[in-house]
Amino acid sequence: MAKIELPMLKKYQRPIVELYGLHALVDTGAVIPMFSLPVRIITAIFPEAEKILERHSVGGIGGESLGDVYRLPNFAIGELTYSPFDAFVPYEPSLKYPILLSAPLFSGMFYGFDSAESKFIVETKDMPLKRKFELHELRGQLFPQIDGVLIQDSGLFLSNMLCGF
Image (cartoon, rainbow, N blue to C red; front, side, top):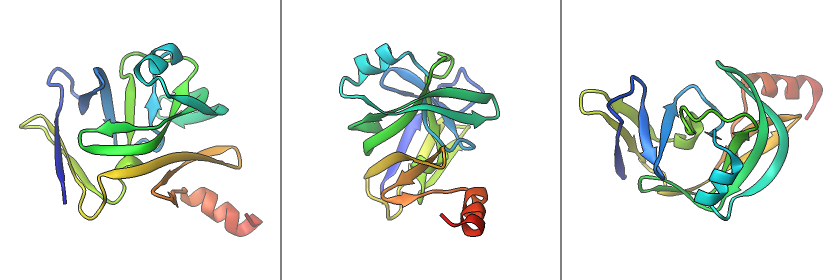
């Protein structure tokens, strides 16, 4: 088991860490990771990024966003690396939190926040430090797949059972 501790930026009321010189919001309610940056900046930071899916809509508490999915060959959160790593990139980026880290990235792990010490903590338990994170399209929706396991919501599961997949 590995324990990864990343300092949270104290000036925010939210769990924000710094990755690749950018602010990353750890959003425990999000399912899809996001890079809310212009594509030219993403490809400058990650020259091997490639568009793999076009014109998708992702919804959240902030509403709907239309954008594309990009694949990075490698992405690191401390010692935890993802190869490949897929992320949604909205057409109208918001630079407030350029990176959004979603809950499925830490599937099978313990993760939490030590607000007294301003730390984001991830314990890998029995998970490897190198994982695969991909986004797949099913019936027009995006779903995360971590290490080959597709994560679906119960609504899609129920509709698949009733209608056949």
